[in-house]
Amino acid sequence: MLTKCFLLCLLALGAYAGEEDVLDLGDDDFTSKLDQHENTLVMFYAPWCGHCKRLKPEYAKAAELLRGNDPPITLAKVDCTEAGKDTCTKFGVSGYPTLKIFSRSEMVSEYNGPREAPGIVKFMQSQVGPASKELKGDDCHKAFLTTDEVSLIGYFEKESSALSTAFQAVAKKLREKVRFAHTYAKSLIEKEGLTDHIVLYRPKALQNKFEPNTVKFEGKDSIADINDFIAKNYFGLVGVRTRDNAGQFENPLVVAYYAVDYVKNPKGTNYWRNRVIKIGKEFPEVNFAISNKDDFQHELNDFGIEFAKGEKPVVLARDAKNQKFILKDEFSVESLEKFVKDFVAGKLEPFLKSEPIPEDNSGNVKVAVAKNFEELISNADSDILIEFYAPWCGHCKKLAPIFDELGDKLAKEDVIIAKMDATANDVPPQFEVRGFPTLFWIPKNSKDSPVKYEGGRELEDFVKYIAKHSTESLKGYDRKGNPVKTPSDEL
Image 1: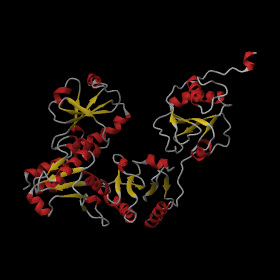
Image 2: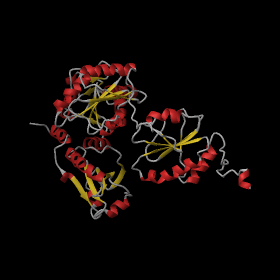
Image 3: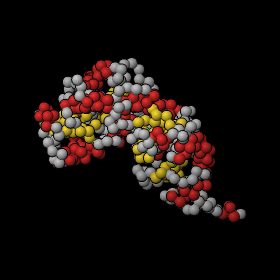
Image 4: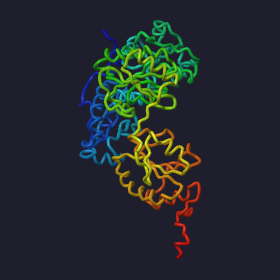
């Protein structure tokens, strides 16, 4: 018969439910219902909101996975267009979906975590209860390791040991990203043959013949050493890169994109992953990962790939300088090995996403593309004001005629007015473009230090800014942007 501890741990891993597990709240019962729940994530939404529609099935799936969690975690929702209008106003909801974490009916914090079910579950579990779960017996130990996630367990003889103290500090720091557990149970320590040890366990789905299923910590009793141990070993030779954890993978990075799916097709997923691992183990200086090609279509687009055909992986890479490289040959162990060898040796030609260089660029607003950027912008012996825009951007469309007029006005000055479609061209890394339009001022003697333009966007604003900041005084304007009078003006 299963022990009570084992049953509780199994429940914590998720007994499946459905949409009905998401608590529906409104103005009339928001406080009374939340007061019945210890920890609640609340989604404030609008039925017509596209982002809300995409989040809804992930949110429901997360509710399934959290059913029976210990300590309890509830997921709830409020329709800001109907029964929950006043509540949404009370909590300052201005966009959809907005998610907030509550303890009873008191708001604890904004939710800034992932928007996929597994990520929502991991994030919320990290927000409640201890950072590291204490395992008091063999059944709970087995249940904790019955998971599809990498897990760390600390085996400590004493709670006050230096390694135990450091382990708990790391757990608090990384609780949103990593599953931690610990035990002081003598029976578990003796059974595992471990005293004052930390062990990283790979889930069954990620186990392979190229690397051990468990990794023991061999460092000093310090936070830094434990952090380094986790960073080095967490993803293994080839990590499974998702939208939630993509930011944790550092360059140089080689990624194989294909139909990664550990739920519906774990065998097929590992078929290709194992081939990447075979090569990855030979190049410890490079990080390797696999990613679902549909989840990362935007990255494929950045490499000029509109659609990844067939079952075989598409392999893309970025070096330490964030330059991009493509495996042009059909995927095989042999082609991948050659590609990575050349990648490491610096023999590959970087991929540059670029529109064609304009045949006629004689206009007063110069058109910059990735292929002519160095010649037109980086090597120009003039001050430059450049706009990075998107063709669909309304603000960019409004700015276009003003920018054209600015180019005409300054046509005889030692200043280049330029524009670049940032959606169709690779933007050099020194230009941080996060929205459209984004403008930069580039002094001719400081090409490596562009200055983000934060001024007004009327013609007069641009003229005054350029007149003030130009390396040499303008011919037609003084430093305040006032037109300079010529003898002919006085006649």
